Image (cartoon, rainbow, N blue to C red):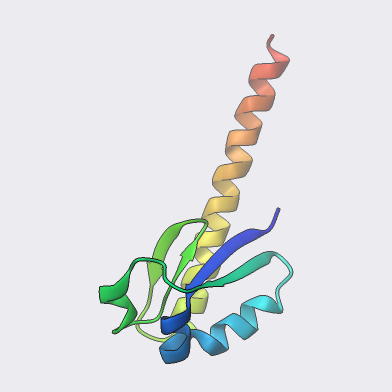
Length: 93
């Protein structure tokens, strides 16, 4: 399952364009650039993205890329744990 990473178009112009290019090269991500993600205060001052709907930011583009990858791993691990629980519940029926 691909991890959805969303970017704000305005933030992309200011901070995130290189990150989008790098993330699009990784087939485990689905990238969307939206007109606005609703984080306007942060948009003007720092690189940010939304990973599966959760806001993440960093001071630099490189740090944001690392943060996105870490958050994606956390989300995937949580999803896997949930699927394991569901499987065990179904087996016990």
